[in-house]
Structures are given as C-alpha cells and as structure tokens.
Amino acid sequence: MMKLRPFELVLVTIFGLLALVALAMISTYKPPVDETTQALGDSVVIWGTVPNETFQQVLIPLKEQIEAYRAVSYVEKDARSFDSELLNALAENRGPDIIFIPHEKLLENRSKIQPVSYESFPLRDFQNLYIDGAEIFALRDGVYAYPVAIDPLVMYYNRDLLATKNIINPPATWEGVVNDIIPALVERDYNRSILRSPLAFGEYRNVNNSFAIMSMLLLQGGSAMVSEGDGKYLINLNMSINRAGLPFENALTFYTNFASPSNPLYSWNRALGLDRDEFVSERLVLYFGKGSEARQLAAQNPNLNFDIAEVPQGAQSTVRRTYASFYGLALLKSSPNKAGAFTVLQTLGAADKSQVIADALNMAPAHRTNLNAGSNDQYGRIAYQSSIVARGWLSPSPARTNEIFGQMVDDVLSNRARPSQSANDAVSRLSELY
Image (cartoon, rainbow, N blue to C red; front, side, top):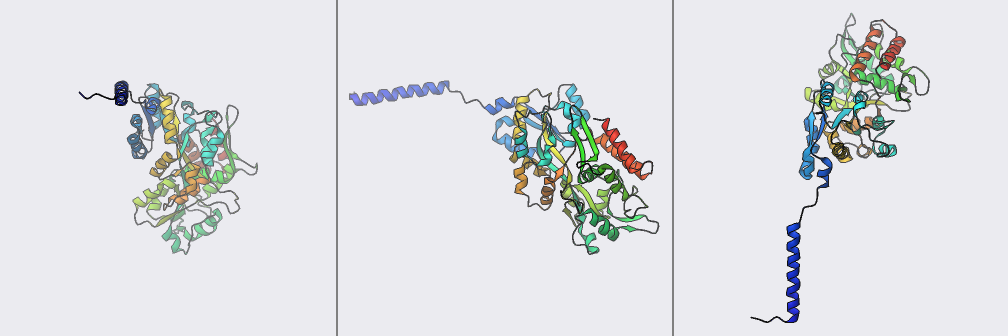
C-alpha cells in the first residue's frame, strides 16, 4: 500500500469532509417555497361578459411562465343574465373573486365590491397611472376597480356617400353637421318619408348607442353630471359646471330635432331600421358607434367603404369631449381568497397585461404610458385620441337608465311634454334609483 505524505493526507481528509457535507445537504434539501403559489391559493375566478378568448390571451402565457396562475380562470357570462347569475352565485357562496365590468355597472355593484383604500393605493398614484376618465373608478372611499380598457364613442362615415356630394372630410363640428351634412345628404320623398339619412339622431330605440350619444351631448354641453356628496349622490345632469345654461334640456332638444317632421333637421324616425344595420347597408352616412365596433362593421360588409373620426364638437368649444365605457377589474367582498385575488388584480391590471386585454377587445388601454405610445392600427389611432378626452358618469343602472332616457325622448317626440319638462322628469326618476 502506498503511504500518503502528510500534505496529501490533509487534502484527502478535506475532500472527504466536503463530500459528507454535500451528501447531508442533498438529503435534507427542500425546494424554495413558491411565494406566488402561496399568494394565489387554490383558485381565483374572474367573471365577465367579454369573450373568453380575450382573457386567455393573457392568462395562457402567464400559466406557462408561473405555475401558480394555473389556479386562475375566466368565465364568460351572458350580458343579459350576468346580474341575476351573480346575485344567485353570491347567495349560494359560489361567486367569483373578481368581476370585469364597464363603469356603467359600477354603482349597481358597488355594495358587492371591496374598494382598495387610498392608504394602499394613493389617489395621486392612481391619477399618475391612468388617463383622466378612468378616475370614474376612484370614489370617495377608495379605488373600486383597476382600469384596463376604454371603448370611446366615435363617428363612422361612409366615404363614398360623402364623396358623391363632393365632401372630402367628415364634419368636425355640429355646425358642420347642421349646415352642410344634413342639407346635402338627406333624401326624402314627396311626403317627407326618409329614403337616406345623414345621421341617426332623434329616436332612442332604433339607435344602437343612444345612451352614449345623449351622454356625449351632455358632456359637451358642460353638464355637472353626477357626483358624490356626503352620503348621497348629487344628480346635476341639468346643471352646468359653470352655472350657465341647462345642458340636459339643450341636449334633449338638439337630439330630438332630428326626428321631428316639422324641423328642417328631420332625418330619422322610428320606422327606419337599427342605425348600425342602416350604416352597414349603406343607407346611413354617419354612424355614432363605439371604437370596438370597427372590425365588426368591416366584417359585416366587406364592400363598405368607411372610415372613423372623432365625434364632432361645438365650433366654439375650448374643450374636446366624448363619452366612453371604461372597463375595470374589481375585487368582490365575498371572495374567500382576497389575498390571491388581489395579486391577480395587480398582475392583470399592470400596463403590459392590460394592453393585451385592450388589444384583444379592440379597445384603447387605460394606462397613460400605453395611450401615450399611440397606435398605428387603422382604427386604433382615433380610438386612442378619443379616449384621452373621453369621460363617463355614474348612472345607477344601465337597464333602468335606458328605460328612463327612452321614455324622455318619446315624451318629447309625441308632444306629451316639452324638453324642459321631460328632462326634469327624467332627473327626478333617476334620483329615485340612487
């Protein structure tokens, strides 16, 4: 046997000890705890009415990158039954953790939502992150939803029909609509039956976005809309921000003029089809729709030569305004997994993930940085620009508000009430819903 020298003996002893230590470490090794898994818990369920594919575009990559997100699921619900399904699910303790809703459904769900306090999410930080109109989700006691996407009201126009009358550009002002578009493009027969309409204003039930159009006119007219007071809502639809004029009455008068046979602006009535269908069939020159509708319109009639523009403004207006639906992710009070749901809320509400969701919905993103980057999409550029000047308001319930607005318009057109009385009646009826 070869005899080891002292130096070699020391080296062998050291390596032996190191091997024993390594073996002990391997035998007692435990993988590090996945903090994300701990934070998410067993499951986080999101309910919404947008297509399932929308959320899968962001959830599938997340699940591939982070195993914990396999616990997150999105469930698409029918918009017509969403409210009743949610109520039943909450009553049976099987409701979702998060809901994805437009701001129009904020107030009717406010009692169910867990707001994020301003101590956790300072209002200043919220305002720095999101575009101005997204502040609709920031109420007195906290942030009720993380803004994700914006769907602004825009103006679609038939390029061929405008060009036929040598009109190169769509109207940028309401004065241009009244003085140029209506006289040039309205077509009526000998008994004033409308054969072709420049725009679908006046009626309520056959105008696809009648609520959004009325809201746009209110906002452009300087209405104080609805705000939070001390323990109550202040309904100031017919009160101007600068205390001058009656914006609700003025908006109603302007709107209904287009469906009054005795008015020179007469160009729409209830005998016509839905305005969107009329536009697709090339019997309507201007269609006021949401930005997300562009691709659907193109698919409905591939031969339709249309484009998109911002909605007209008053010629003397110093501030541009349009209406938009603001979509956000809201955490429910009933969630059995608030910690995990809040983590998901923060992840999906981040600028990069919300951009994916907004793109999938053909909407504009709510984050300032994303909007500032702009869009090179054929229709997205106008939607982005419109979103910057878009606002919403705290309506009590989409269904009930539509019912009241529709009745208000009908009362004027049937001569049951003057615009002033009809507008005031609508405010009174709305006040009872808050």
